[in-house]
Image (cartoon, rainbow, N blue to C red):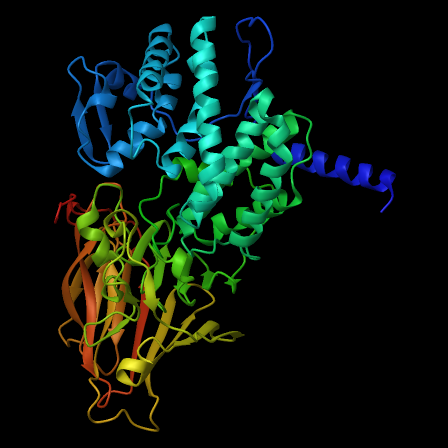
Length: 585
């Protein structure tokens, strides 16, 4: 390629980056005014925008010495928060990650700016004596991004002495992360470390010489982790939100420094944006698969506003291993993928062939979901097959988790075995859209293959399903094989469930008094207690519909969910309101 062609290509890439940055609701790149420094040295030149949600009321709590993170509260009583005994690892990581600076910025007062500067100065003064988790690579990553994004808050009205200390600490952390990024936990943490190093090379004048290397390493991780359909290699839908919150401002930072971003960055963003709509239910929250916990609707709305296409999402995310059917006002999402590779499976779930259903802004069938930070007691349960709307055999999960693993309580246990073959067929017929998928997660232990077929009617008012139990040993399941199954349908806490007299059906009443009727043709449907972990309130009591039997006696289970619109002029009663949150931990 000629030099002229290369220059044209570079200019086109830069223009694409600027167009991409312009999506971001006019987010400004802030050029810094810094104290005049004698001699030569590193300088901060830009501060990328932090697009995460900020709450100015939190600033008063922090000023008063009350630090509430990850469900834990520490009151400092005049002492430095960095001297306090951390009540949990999550609390310590959030404290030392400095993401809370955005709340001080949102308050926009001289007091909060002085408070932010004082807290940063305290940390700098103690950094030599701070060990883990302050210097864990994942925490260093978040702190670097937070300090760079909030540089105007920290440095406004600062003197030359503090500015020098701040830059010296930044440089030390950048050098540390540069040497440890390759050993950071694989997946989102490692990619975020590469993002942080690209940020530092763009924002700090003395670091620009490292930009080419940082850009190459960033591009490599993006190509390795972002799948062709825009999903993440961990199969966690929440990873898309977390990464886009950093990648969009990063693309803008490249444009602000008049540097062409890597094509891998622009391509990754363009692929990931439609997946925000793919995983979003009609109530604006994400489906609860493979580590996804509570959705922050404001963050999701901010990112979706940056999507120029705003079109109908793809229906077949074959690389990520998910299917979506949307008809009328109804959305069904289904997990049809294998577990992610070992090193990315720390948060992955044993939920193959589970599905979720929503209608007119209301979740109906759900998975339990991963609890928010600080709820380690529920995490192990949330990953089991029984916590998903799918089939369990003999009260075991379709995946096996490592019995022991370093950092299991913090990062989870990897999956050591699970479904290896998950063939999927999808077809549009007169009766609607049909998805048929099979997994072999129980084949080795119980000689059973689970096949699930679902079809959503064109008007979205009827979902028919069938679960089949196929033998791997010929026509019948061996007599010695354990064959007890349970087909579970977890209900959202806002749904009222009443069992129908014949025992085969359950009436589901939505908050708006819409009615969905669940019916099992040849089997008895029981209502059992359940728990919902995917909301911001913590664990909530709910119910689940369960069909039990033995695969040798029942080769298939047919069921249907049918929508009955509310009567004209009906009003919502108090009985139809969702239950209040109940902490079951």
